[in-house]
Length: 332
Image (cartoon, rainbow, N blue to C red):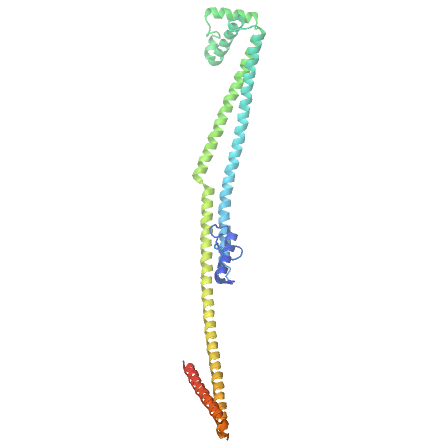
């Protein structure tokens, strides 16, 4: 595996370890880039410093996020508790409103069943009694001096007659219902005030949470920490890669020089062998020529001998030219 491939594998490992985006698509599991072409690099023995920096940065970033998460969780817990209390108050309010509605319906149905209308004497006497009771509640000081101060003289006389005669069953039920409704109204008002207080508290907490934005800031801080650590790790890795690649280039250059020297030596040896072979052939040709010259032949064979001698001389001439060429090549 070459240096660049080692770099990409290392970057992929760092990206997988830290979760920092932006680098996962650079290298796949086979050491190939997005284009599918195999990248060239070598095995790199990287120091542990980049990985240690990433680890420390991860811990710092996670602590930042967890602290913000704890604060946000406490805020959420408070909101949940307030919402539960508000729900209880809303349920109580709904029950009391249903009770008031039911009480009124019961009185209305009783009146219908017994033929009591708004214009009936029994209903008018009930309204007279209600006025006196409301007066005593709303203006207690005046009621102490004159309990019937809210009535005219005719109404006073009628009120006295009604009280002397005694209340009817309908009037008793209606007055008891008035008391129940009045008490329910007090509780209803309290429920409404509590619900509004809970809503106000929720709005306040949400507003403070928006101003604080702890989780957003923590997430941003986490990303900044991780990217800074990742950039430092990449810088260290790239420096190691450049140094390693320079070393590989130097090794390749030295190997090329050694190979060129060996080729030159082999070429020189081959030329020398060729020269020796030519010289040997020249010596053999000269020896053969001497033998032919020393031989006595008949006139019939003299022409053949002369022809052979000429061939030998031609061959010797060519061999001498080859040797001169070999010597020139050796000089080059």
